Image (cartoon, rainbow over the protein chains, first blue to last red):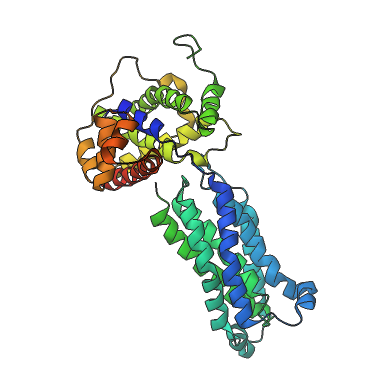
Length: 211
Length: 187
């Protein structure tokens, strides 16, 4: 096929493209609604939600995941554009992540040795991981599907960012149910859940977002 | 077009043309792609370092297809050229990678002076027909009719029994599949 012939058929394709970025936000949000509603219907919302959201320590169960998720969400959207080279927004996510890791390390250091392991293990780690990952599945799949229309300069990073975003949002939703408020517990397992979803996003991005 | 021959075209030209194209102006779109092709060819050839002209033309075609299929990622509030150059850069790097060569292509060096000499004819791609053969039968027949035989869409639609609306969707899907096959085939 000559290039002129290719141009002629490209120009003959009159299906207009849809803007990618707004659809990423739309589809992810829409994909989150059903799994979130189901999870909360099955697990229930904690009774003292208002107090928990106002108390400085438990408040972090929402602030930290959202502090990571929202910048990562914007970064993922920006990374669907081919000319994007730097995403300064990710520094905010990084700061939230470093804060969480520092806090976890401080908690480990200040907890007496015999209490450390039981504190980390807690009593609901399986429900925690399972919930965060299953709430994430649908919105992540929808987001990646929309992002296949994108032209990412870094497909794996792009996938990791959307995984981080969806994982963080799912963790914040799970926190509406979860009553284990020890930082040792939630920093460990929320963090791990978010990282697993991030990893899934990175692998999916590597294979599915190439163009 | 409205600029004098040889004078660099105003930055806003391409952006305006793409904006019109995105509003459904097919003529502006065709003009834009036609103007872009020699610029892309110049960029690719300047970067090709030892690759033959067929290879270059394949990268130009890959870039044009990507520009077409990915134009929903362009923000109409931004100038078009940096977006186009980023796509070409991506396609050059990709093509080198498939040849097993890593390459660093600094995008800042892309400037209009790379436009290919006028009069250099695009080369015919040897493998294009085999690529089209790998598409599902209907897609292949449609692209062959439109591109290789250069029939109008009405005649192709009649021949393949496609109403105009169906042909429109079929063509779009066929191009998307062709892009995937070009990528897999590693031309």
